[in-house]
Image (cartoon, rainbow, N blue to C red; front, side, top):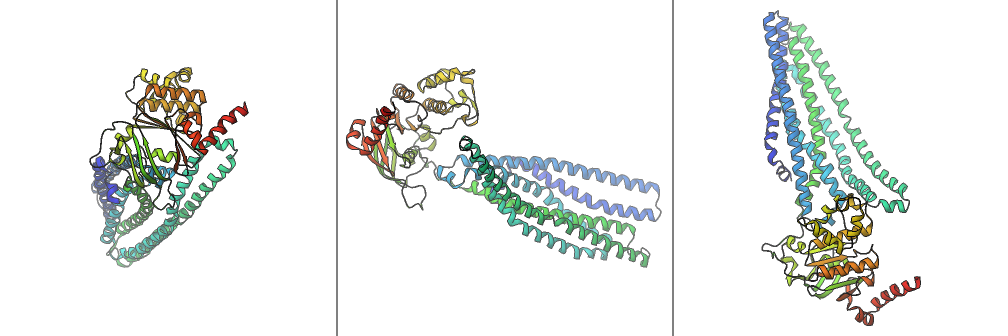
Length: 580
């Protein structure tokens, strides 16, 4: 797990190593300064000359400046290394998510993925920063301080034999008590982000049903749960400070009492004022470094949970990958389903699709009707291999979709969903998702065929009109027509419209379908719709119910043979006449 993370250091190895070396230099100098200061105090007590004092003072100033430079440069290189490491980690996570199939995405909620790429990466970054800076400096300072304390104070340094185990044991106990609460927080962050995401995406629904207060309460509950866990954990971690003060004060009292008695009884033969001064300084350094190590322990323990969550994303294997020797050309838009059965999870008891046998010739227009939950969308998602069949084979142009290069297959299939997405940017930029090299004339032509040109030109900035995030500044029908134009620019072998004209009137719907016949006559067109009028002129109409195709044929044929189709047709047509 850690080996995988260290692969993200890459071009930031040099600043990382530089930080380690600078921290070693700073630690060595910081431990030498009290030693030299103690000798200077003893020399002054013995009556040394001014030149020696000035010379030693200059040495101390130089050492302090070098230590300052090491610390400052170490901070700069550490910031560059840790920020660069986090950048690479976010890059790898995002690129990994792009390789996921829908099945992989279903495993992680979108809110959890957002938390992992943001909050968890920040925690890992903080841990890495501590690892290359404080986690190197603190142990070195601790070891050097203990050695120098024994050199300067001799037997007096045995006080650390008592203090260090007490402080270390107390800090470890505090950290272990706090860890379960910190671990719980991350899962609750997922819940909090999910609440925010759902509320922002469904803002119109929230306001339409006047559910603002309930949503506020839902968010407040998630936020309160995080606060409670953090408060509990921080309350325990706060015990570090009084424990530290207790040990520091004990050390100070012990050194002053015992050291003063030794000086009085032995006349400074065993220990002198300078040594006591150094002992107090080294004692404080030892305690501070133990405190720093406890902070590192807490941070690394917290980050370990984040590291696990990040590595889960990095190590997740894409369920759908291109074969070793893939087919790299889709010759036409013929589609065949042969004994296809599909379920979303291996443990699912029921198949979402069952016994699908179907042949669609290239260039045909196929309509699909069916009630909610009849698996219409599931059927078409197997064509661009967004999911793999559980049983049976789906073929495009006579080739098993599993034998195609994924980019090639999906490049030949364009899908327009009922709730398709527009991205932040101009209308031109959104349209060029279909073909990044499309000319302005091609953009206009595609919009004309999708019945979008007229309303686009009505905007003050025309095709340079800026689309807000999610297309919030255009209507549902306008958004659908722009998405259809974007799909047309792709000039696909297969065009799938998944209820993507539901927000436009029947006249516009008919004009769009007429544009398809004119612009992409050789493209296979599969239209999922709720209105019979949207598929009435299709070459083949499929009626689906409960995951199976219960009827297939032309409009006239189905009126004679399919009770479901005839009932829907009569409800829509007779209902319309009655309303009029």
